[in-house]
Image 1 (cartoon, rainbow, N blue to C red):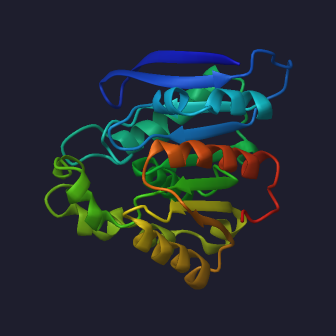
Image 2: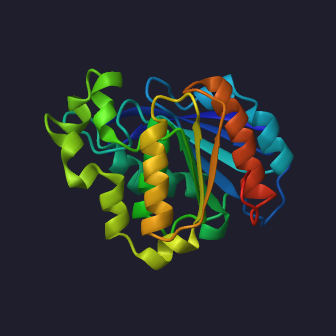
Length: 251
């Protein structure tokens, strides 16, 4: 596998940005690679997955491209006082990576995933861009924004003074505004550790997806905390779920 760091100038963010990419060494002419768009959590950057997990070996095993952008501390949102990271991700980064790299543009072979803040971003993308992907994996996602002030002192830079309570930022509101049939066509993976401080809101959010929306969700619960020991194990399970056992519910 080749590991690339792409440095590029973003017109939307008005700054230099970096994107980490893992891509197979051997490419077949004319074949577009399946691609996983993998988002990082708060306090990390796009390099964390490669540095803190065995992701490169997993990418080699499954022969797919993995794209890991830098999302700063943005919650992948157009910040109240900062960069327009949602516009950057959807209008610039993903379209440009599809032009630069030999990756598929078909929803069937595009997947979105992330951990913690990145889990929120992955769910947001799946709920708002349902026709871009065939599967979403949210690992220890922030699903209740009321927790954000306790983990992010500068949260007002993203959400403003009252933004964490505004409907536009709530995942349930995004789901309510989405086309339900399109949501049901996506494959859903959701994971939370038993020791994670956000377990209860994740249980409630999963109940909402299943009981209120009628989605089929592979909900993985078990020993684990909000840390890289758990996420390293989970990314292995996510890729196995995506690439091998796509018709099985993870136990």
